[in-house]
Image 1 (spheres, rainbow, N blue to C red):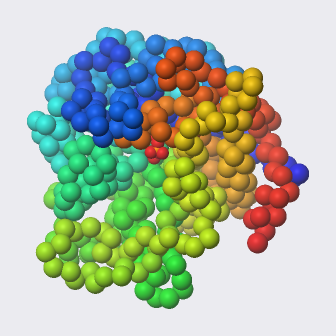
Image 2: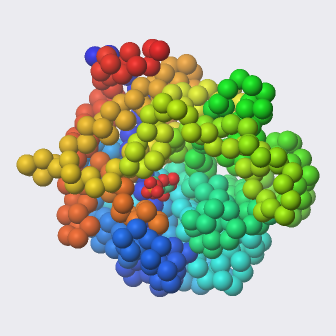
Length: 476
Ligand code: BG6
């Protein structure tokens, strides 16, 4: 057994989101996923929608106590635009929404848990989609900034840590290219417009934060799901494909968020392929002037890449970035078979090195990482505890690599698991369970898993015990 010590004040915690944990109780607006479930419930795994989720709206006090019990010192969730705001044009407030988020913040603080908030976790009010075209509309950016300002004014006396968006690239991919998020449009040009508008929305919210924030310690960032590309081989075509994959999967949001500018190669491709977004000089200026203070990195899996099989010059084809790279199914990869994602903890080390080398060693934390397992109830023991040794191994391996990059000088200040309590997850609904705490969705009874007790030990001591076989595995 090898012991690895993490820095003092390290964030040990977990992340969820408003739409995935709260339930729709007492909300008078639908977000895009509420609307999709109301109109097409058959798209959701087992036909289960966001109505109850993990009941956080009603049980947040007990839930937060349980989070304390497993050693969490920080929690990220998100403020639902559709819960806080009454009228979107003027960003007038709903009293119950304000009460609810105030109570959540105060309960976290009472329990020694740092409340960390995202302002958007895929959840656009459905009526803004229908009235204005959602993230394709510049007016929706204005409305988002008004909502953000309300959050800063209401809560920044106690909330220090803010994130403008969670995984904006997923909004672009799911909503405008690959059909897994409402509005389920398939149109590469619109996808790129949405990407730019989301970036402007993030930068303008940051600009607003700089004037509305009431907290001298306050900081603001963005949460990006970085999926480092690994080329199939050293050959030039595969290397080139990897470069392009990085442009579209990571640098599309990372460069403007952290450096205030887009990679020139990306802009050239968009112009050449006639999918360039509409943008004004003022918008580029706002992006340039409002970079992030720190970064949240969601990491689940790497992205293996090869040169595309087909010519990028195909005719009468929809435009997708995949004309420049293709996903490569690497023989011998380690998989989480339930979720269908490759397990490659070494990527966390590479992410740390990338941030250190290419982004000025920006402070960052792992804002999501985790292992989704289906039918997890199979692993429940006679005492009713889920024996999720696979999750303990998964987190140990990732923390081992994270420790390695910190030791090499990367400026990482925390690790958040997805997720504290099993929660609802978009089209996948309750298919895969990720929590340190199990949730029986029929009774809403919550039970700490073996990994939750394990995490408590790590979090309270700042020490990770790494079995020798894991150390040996990463030696080769
Ligand atoms: C992350 C999202 O990308 O993945 C979460 O931020 C999501 O909202 C999580 O729940 C797990 O996704 P899934 O599809 O495996 O449930």
